[in-house]
Each structure stands twice: as structure tokens, then as C-alpha cells.
Image 1 (cartoon, one colour):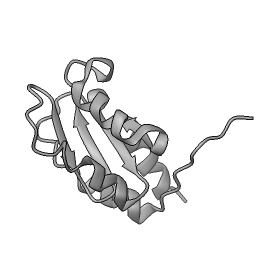
Image 2 (spheres, rainbow, N blue to C red):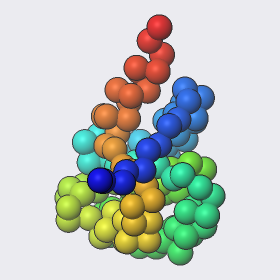
Image 3 (tube, helix red, strand yellow):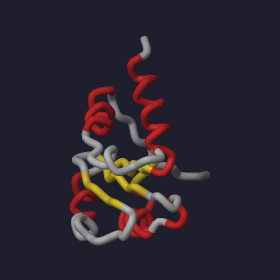
Image 4 (cartoon, rainbow, N blue to C red):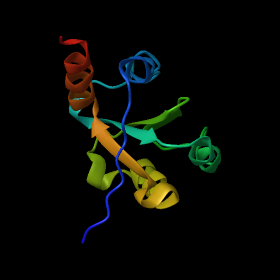
Length: 110
């Protein structure tokens, strides 16, 4: 009785998300670098108002299929992640960078 959204990405799509991360030079702890997967272009359009905003020590960057959020104080205390979550609601899923890299590695296994 529970509805759940599912995101299915092929290897190329996941590779593009991994290679498109502009925050790797800033994020010092990959467990606090969060990637929100975007299911539709309209979601990216909703986030345009957040792009370029001053987030203090946090960072938010938009990619084609993902929003990247650096949460140095943790995701639960992140103003940027909270704002992004409010705009997207249950229309997204997020994973930390470590988990996303593990999923990407699994895509390469035969």
C-alpha cells in the first residue's frame, strides 16, 4: 500500500552525473556531498531560483540530471538541502557521493 518513485539510470546517464560534479574541488568529505537525482527537466527549472544563492559554507550546483549539494555540517543541518527538498518534494532521490560512486562501479561490473 505504499507508493514509491523509482529512478532507473543506465550506465551512460550515471557516468554523466559522476563526471559532471562541479563540487569535487570543494567537498572534503564525500559522505557530506549529496547528489539529488532529477527525473525531469521541469525539476531543474524549479531549482533555477536556488542556483547562485549565497549558502554560506554550503554549496549548491545544478547539473543536467542532478543537483549537487555540499553540506559540511551534515545534511540534516543543511539549508541548501532543505530548500532543494522542499521544492522537489518526493520527486527526487538523493545519495551521498560515496554511495553514488559505489553504484557507478556496480554498473561497470559484468
